[in-house]
Length: 103
Image (tube, rainbow, N blue to C red):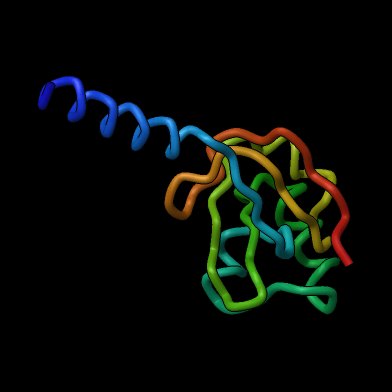
């Protein structure tokens, strides 16, 4: 009985980790994000840097920086405020279901 209960608890924990989440913030490049640059005023620079090959990230209003595994899905949103739906593991968005413009 203890083994069954332990197995159920472990399965629930793994299942909870597998559900998706969302992150809302500005798409910018990693270099500028680390320097505290993101937002509407930085949109032109973000487009240029991401277009030039810099890695895109999502920076939230409280300054958290989320790495993005699937760069192609956020690249066209450089400089924009978006909500990214998908798998969020720690500070990384590992898979993306959708990217929508946020207000």
